[in-house]
Length: 326
Ligand SMILES: Cc1cc2nc3c(=O)[nH]c(=O)nc-3n(C[C@H](O)[C@H](O)[C@H](O)COP(=O)(O)O)c2cc1C
Image 1 (cartoon, rainbow, N blue to C red):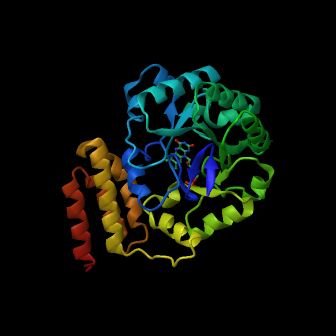
Image 2 (cartoon, rainbow, N blue to C red):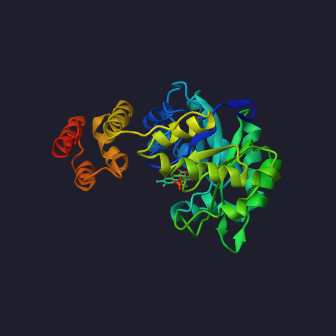
Image 3 (tube, rainbow, N blue to C red):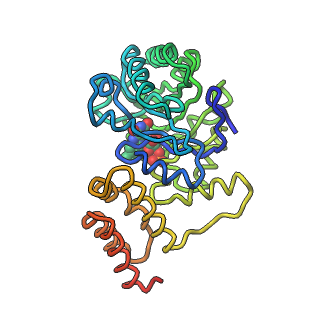
């Protein structure tokens, strides 16, 4: 399908990094629907260098047949290279690394990291180069358009990171200033892949098969990176695979969605233990029930009463009884 360095990626659908969401359990759950690779939550270079316990916990994951990319954020080439060495020494299951050049959150950009890097294309290249010097694993980058509409720098950044040896670029065509609001500017990235020597993935408001295919057609990208669109809707991954394989699309029933949600909760429990898993799940699982009839109460209960696995079973059973779903 496409290659990241010497790694063959057999599927055009990729799971985007999402802080607070794409932990090992989430990645494992989503993979069963057919993903090219998965990306960790963003991990701080300095957190790794200082041995911060929480930061280190993001690096604990098994192989489980997944191609896992570790995403790092930072702004200093030497520290980023150090962090890569540390990560490699702690986990042999890392397939490759990604550098976060897209995070718009102030806590990250004020340190010069995340999408603040878009203002300094040369530094973007230097970071990739410094990492390449310490690892044989491929390096990818995830970028935005630029910091704001007056500073649209993605072409310069792509040029610098490509020259420095990056193996893939994923672009979310919004500016830092736009955060997640409005629509991505697909017009600005039209035919972008034709100008590049390395694979391109696209990300941004991909909620349906149509959104995803359109984004690929406009940009000529090699694949899509799904974030919020696949949260609670793993059938989007399945249906994109069906589309690429010329197969018929699937419609998921309410009962199937309930089963999928249960599967995700179980994978989160295996990873984090029941208490933490259910707390994390509250923020994610309501998405499985968007568009369900009378789902307002169900979602309110899931986001407030979920403490144990049994709570999930009870809340769902109540909902099914009240709505005559069997
Ligand atoms: C809750 C949340 C956390 C995110 N965390 C990260 C992150 O850690 N690293 C990153 O590169 N992008 C992160 N993103 C951006 C997504 O990977 C994606 O590019 C963006 O949400 C656009 O795709 P979407 O509109 O389909 O969600 C995050 C997005 C969300 C909503």
